[in-house]
Image (cartoon, rainbow, N blue to C red; front, side):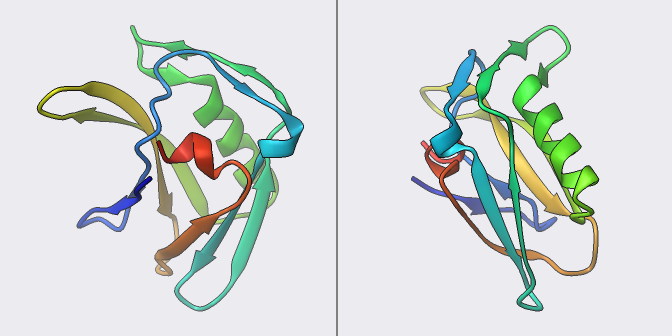
Length: 115
């Protein structure tokens, strides 16, 4: 389980979202802490979230962005592509839309964000 922060202060998970993912209500929350100590918690509805490899769109990413935006959280979610020596996969990437970088991500959804 790892989170990688790149030079642009994007936080990369290593959970593969390339296939459909079932999210139960008991594992649907993420809490973000930013540099000034502010925390934001968002949840997504329980359900099955798919992935479209042709256009690299993930229902999971779209839903997190809807919830982040509707809650006024200054964080954006992206689909990230990772190419390792033995594996290629798509993952979730979070980036602050303000000057406050993300310092931690926790919550019941974490096992899906991290592999």
